[in-house]
Image (cartoon, helix red, strand yellow):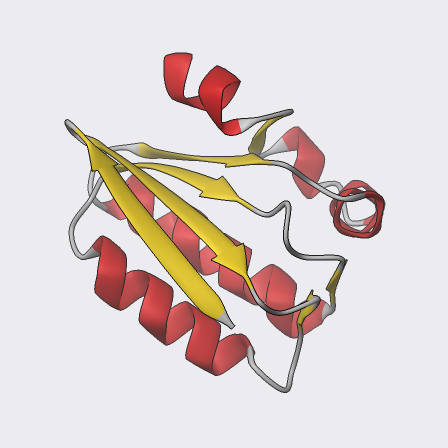
Length: 110
């Protein structure tokens, strides 16, 4: 698993790669590393194009990132959802709460 962070002014772009899934096997590590990298960043774009599957622990990671950005007065935007990730978020209706965009450029503009 690799997390890559790019700062663009006050916006942080976080991409996840090198793992097909965020699940109970790696969720704690992914969340801890993501929160460490983001620090007190408020506006975050999370690119999930490298993730094929989420289980409940993976959903917890995304909720944690969402809550962290809100705690700092900002917003988290998620993009690049693969069909597997999108179906999980739709099933539990987080697609109604999360801001979801097709790609990082669109998410960063809005």
